[in-house]
Amino acid sequence: MTFDDILSIPPYSLEKEEKEKLLTERLNELTELHRKNCTEYRNMLEGTGFGADPVKSYKDLPFLPVRLFKEMELRSVPQEEIVKTMTSSGTTGQAVSKIYLDRTTSSNQQKAMVKIVSDFTSSGRMPMMIIDCPSVVKNRAMFSARGAGILGFSIFGSKKIYALDDDMKLDTEGISAFLHEHAGERILIFGFTFMIWQHFFKELLRLRNEGVTFDLSRGTMFHGGGWKKLASEAVSREEFHKRAEEACGLRDIHDYYGMVEQTGCIYMECECGNLHASNFSDVIVRRPIDFSEAGIGETGVIQVVSTIPESYPGHSLLTEDEGVILGIDDCPCGRKGKYFRINGRLKNAEIRGCSDTYAAKFQ
View 1 (tube, rainbow, N blue to C red):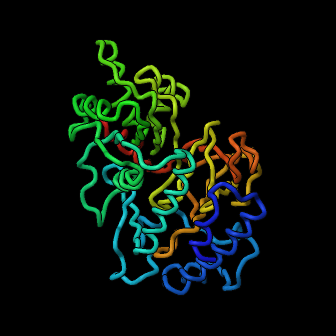
View 2: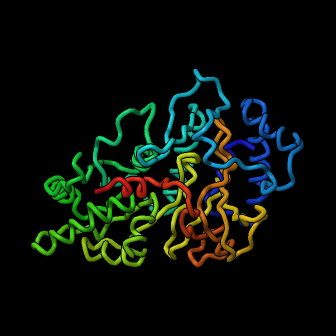
View 3: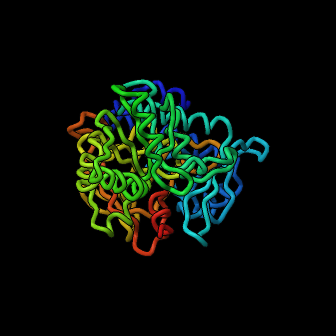
């Protein structure tokens, strides 16, 4: 099964059995592709005794710990075919993952993003406000997860403005002119959770108390990158949404879960507050004691699988996050597939998300 075959299917339309069949076929193919083309991956498979015969379920495929990409160069294409190298977020002194993309994988990441996000916007490109500074996106050949997130969502923006300057100060004049120019239009807003809270909502609330207001009631916000810092400040999802409406009238807000090791396969939060796996990916919750599959409602370690990676063996990864599957095919929002919740990082795991790593360095 080719990736184009998967692209032709609406991203949240497959029920459990049909999706499991699709994922098993595609992930078996990717496992064999990486076995043939990545020596390090082949050695790991052979070292664990994993054979070359296809598995009956993608859940039985071996997974790599996501940390491995910080310690090894893992790619399945020649160096000269690499067009982009992405790095994970990290605090000072941390090693970062390096993910090597060829043109096919990079293109398929973007195509998947378009399918997933379009299901939540139900419209074409919109004027876009990025809650970050313009200097983040510099080297297009090698950039961080933060820059990758901005560029990934930027494809949905018809005209873009950065709401913060390079000192992370709110550009009130620029925002005012942008909103005046696009009065009455739907606005797309993107940023990372802690930065939005610290540099956008807090500042808008301060300005509101001084009589300066901005109306973003027609806005749709996508944000991600972790909640660790905000959780420590007792800022819940409900508080985040409440302050958004108070600050600028914003109500349509969607968190997402994702990682640089599987860019493109983001897990979007629906109107009911649940994260969803699309046809391009899936989440498996593993019991930490023996890595068996946990049941619905049972907390465990998150494994993620993706149909996209062809230039590196990142199609089956064990994360350092803890979460729980809430249900399958029956979310009130109407989208098929698994829906779930992320509880946070495992104890003693390194800080990873764009929001959380920025917050760790923020003074």
